[in-house]
Length: 158
Image (tube, rainbow, N blue to C red):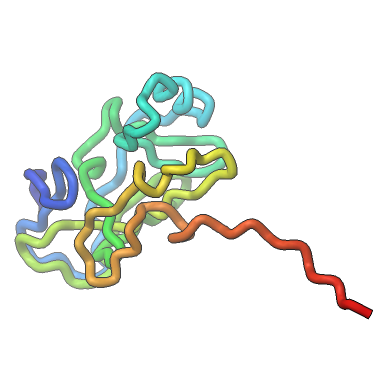
């Protein structure tokens, strides 16, 4: 149904070999299932500017590390106007087509990587998006912009 090859978006990508109809379950995201603590330990030595991992958060207890026993699903790139989505069922992750995908088209889903309070100031540059979509938000993070600090309400003058 698909092939992994060089991508203009980032490194390797996954490309349709045939027409894939909307709603088709394309592939399961496989790899070693570990705790969040173990995933953090494995990648704590990475440079802060290196966003390249094959981690997929399943839930509050489990992360899939496709860098260990993973399959080709780990090469599906992020896209701001995706043709696929990830679906979690019974603690398993699948990639499904959300529209019909034509032969030769690269498969993409929105990573929607969450923001954290302790993110470095350059986190948007680290997770910059290169999908090339017309409505590219410029980052793989969600929400697209860092939330503004809440200002205290103004007091009325008497």
